[in-house]
Image (cartoon, rainbow, N blue to C red; front, side, top):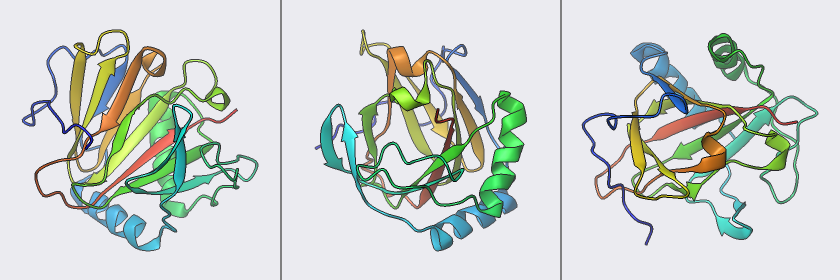
Length: 202
């Protein structure tokens, strides 16, 4: 069984490396976050698919959906499918976060964590189509889940960020190269969570 989260649940880890991660709670207020969460759960064409992690094919323990510009292919899909086209809600979120980052994103991966059993294992987003030192912007709605990172060279060096309802997390250049991240399973009951990770595919 995948290892459960071993980080403190009361807040962010001390000494969080700001040169790698930037966290902003409540980028969207509660009313807007509630509306977006409900909309995404109900209207997104969710799929549970096979994904390559470290050259191994695994069934994702969560539901996903890929959106983006028409010319951008879903690089994580084994069938290389075209993305779903942007919805008004996704374009609104994209327009809000791009000025914060100074980057134009052309795609977004939606992840639907239905309960405490849904998760994503340790990995880094280092696919060649993301370029060198990719910057990824993450927006979360719903259940608070811990986003854990650990140094690839020293697993004892680890931190955690509690991704709150309506929050924004920026994964800066360098994180994917030297660190891994995950959303662990939980022994506690968990409600629904939808996470959006905005990316620039070359």
